[in-house]
Image (cartoon, rainbow, N blue to C red; front, side, top):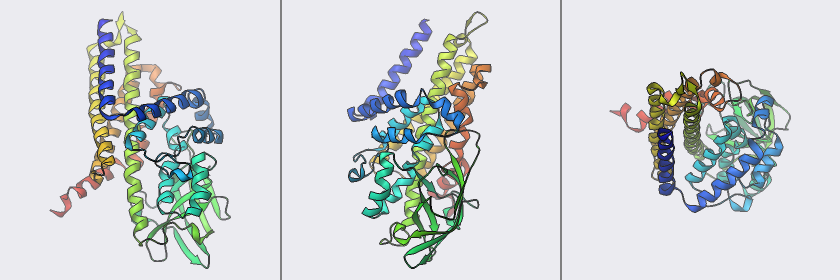
Length: 399
């Protein structure tokens, strides 16, 4: 018992140290509001949503009413100005308590779909599409990945050709989060000048076919394959028409950076849950007359988990601070994503192992998290692609 209490004190003291160093009272107030939302709206229902393989639209409205969908979005459209990277960390830490990555991916798909609209859209478009999305009325999905390429945006083949006041769009998108439910797609397409652009596409338009995809994890988050055949979109739905031709490409890259940062924050949060759940299990589970935690091999597994999570947390918080100071590089974010997702894969695997047979049962948080590790290691750019980007950023191929 003394050892268990010492472990709890050490974990609590470490957590308080990190909180004091990086989080302000404003962050902690925001944490309380997210925690309240999760306890009231999510935790009682997440198991059913996983079985239904769908998030109800009422959840988006509840999140909008709680002010959670407008982080770093313009205040004139219902967003919350003045949010920083640590607000994103807090949001992911608290949402992760529900033990469902699909919840975060689906409910907050506007987190990757809305920035191009907020940065490049006209006031009229933002009023018509962005404001309803922030309020939870509309669902947005980012449509970049295609059957022939994901992280390689130069391989995008979807086309948009001008016909008077409309754009005729043809192409396919795949693995699109919220793609089946989305009211609007923030669609990456090749323009007539061969530049990359974004078009806001109303999914109710003729010529759009959406097929829901079955997945290993993220069950409550719908994922779709989308075919666009001669879809006619108003030309004023093309974002950034007044900007240089490379604006779309630069926006894609900037979007990737923040997507990867958030994936890392999610991975770290889930790794910490795996550790804490495994620690509690090891303290309570009695094997051969004593708690599991008394077995040296078990204690060492938990020590390794705690070590990796602490190192990951240091890199996550440092990167967040550098993002807020505009002093980060692409390599920094890629390194963070690989460190965080590797940490999660290790911790989820060890947690399931420590849980034994219970770790293989549906309804146990570590079981669901274990099934969802790979999507974080692959989504937003696979581990190997991250290493390639790191190598390029460090100049290895130019030497």
